[in-house]
Image 1 (cartoon, one colour):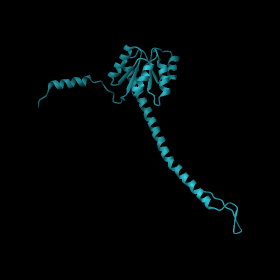
Image 2: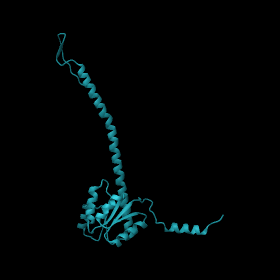
Image 3: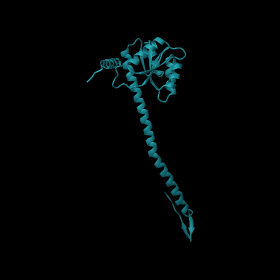
Image 4: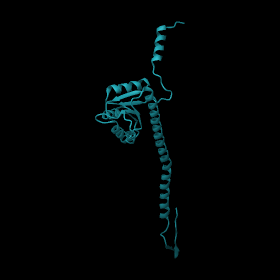
Length: 207
């Protein structure tokens, strides 16, 4: 048996270079939004190394355009940006999409009032700067799981509504048939309080 040492070495290097994947990670597209190209690239590189597909946008308006082009599960956005800031992006996404992506706001602000304001404006989570790769990793995994659960629940609700519609449809058709039969029965009866051969006739029909 001949072993090609070059092939073996190349295969070993390839396996070593492959990013470590979490067993329960949901493979989804993540949109990174930041007006700083350097910061945007830094975050994108972290996520790429963790095995995620990443799309980048330079501000909120650019992010809305990217959302039309890609199926995004998570938006990781800076707070302060020109054109459209992170909170305005949150509001727009949450009010315009049936199943909006999970939104994580990155901010250097630590005031509780400001962080509460971010959540009230549609943010699902926030991550205070500075942060490291491991902090980002665990928060992203949690966000993707929540988004997946939301999708599953929405699908199950839709299927349940369809099943209920199918169950109630035969009942509606049966009621229509019974109503038509009742009309035929009434039409076959003599007029109420009529006289037939000097005999007074009164009747009451309850279908």
